[in-house]
Each structure stands twice: as C-alpha cells, then as structure tokens.
Length: 236
Image 1 (tube, rainbow, N blue to C red):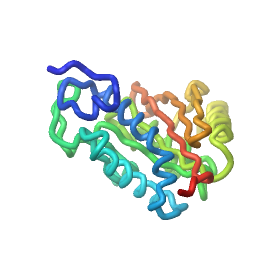
Image 2 (cartoon, rainbow, N blue to C red):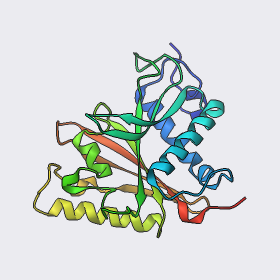
Image 3 (cartoon, rainbow, N blue to C red):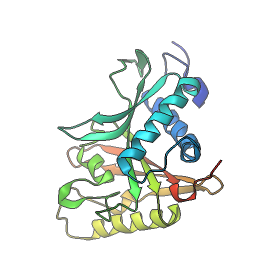
C-alpha cells in the first residue's frame, strides 16, 4: 500500500493508503486556498443569497479539482439526517480505499456548511437557530449534519464588517449560551469557542477551528471555519 502523503497535490492524486483525516484536512486546505480566487472570478455573477453562493462555490471548487485535486469531487446539497441537507460535500472522484475502507463516488468523506455573516434573519444562526434548529454549529452538535464524521467544515461569507469582528461576536454568542439556562436541546460550554484565528489580509480570507460535544452521543466533532471577505471583491 502506498505511503500516506502530506501535501495537497500528492494527496489529490493517490488512489490508496491515505487516512480519512489526512484527506479531509487536505480538502479543507484546498478549499481555503481557493476562496479568494472564487470570490474574484470575473465570470462569477454577484450574489447575496446563501443558497446561490453555495452553489457557485461548489461549481468553482469542482472545476478546480478536475486539474489540481483529481482524487476529489464536490457536490451541492448532501442529504443528512431525515430531510436535512448540508450545503457542500466532498467525495472520491472514483472508487478508492480511504483508511482501509472502500469508498465509492456515493460516499462523502467531508461535509461543509455555508453561512452568511451577518445572517439575514436569525442573528446568531452561524451558531444557533434556537428552537428552529437552523444554526450551523448547532446542527453539527445535534448530529443533523456530519453525524458519521469527527471532522467537518463551515464556510463563512463575510458580507459586512470584518472576519475579526465575527470571530469575536461568535465567541460572545457561545459564551452567552454556555452561561445561560439551557433551554434548547444543545448543551454549550466555553470550551467550544473558536480558537487559533488566522487572517490573510491581502487575500481577505481567514480560518480558525473549534471542537464541539455531540448532543446525541459521547463523541465530539472538530469544525474548521473558513471565511472569505465578500465585501472586498477584487475586480479584474
């Protein structure tokens, strides 16, 4: 079996011997590295709608992967628990072995949820939708998204203010949820705050990560947050 590779380019081309986590992390890196190019693509129509942004990003990533990340393909809306669907998923481009387990083109190894910042209706929807269960992090905690995974990602479309602002604001919301009387199915703690915020100011992208307990089991899920500053599109 071929030795596991650690660089994105090599991982994107091997057909066996890679671990699930290594492939998921390489895919997250691939997405992060192309967010600014997608935003600034002169062929991309300007859109504000979350659904349309998700679809645009999925098409762009899948097109890029055909050349630069050939082991992986991207799909828009992957059905999860019940009728719930996560916004994007990454699957093998052909049947392969990941972590000694066969995966077909129908078996995603990574799911990604996209959210606007700020949310157009429910203010804290990146984190929680309350009783409506529409929150991004909330759905991962409840197992409505990524129930079979220990690693997933969220895309933040920053349409107003800055990534640094939303990092601080989201951590404030998590802290408020942790200190409040628990009135929803999710149980929150201060340890779920977003950590290791890194910002690439020239390209208008940033990243951080967080770890969250599952409500339905004793497991946890690691979330990588990839944000792109949509309100500073560079025109060609």
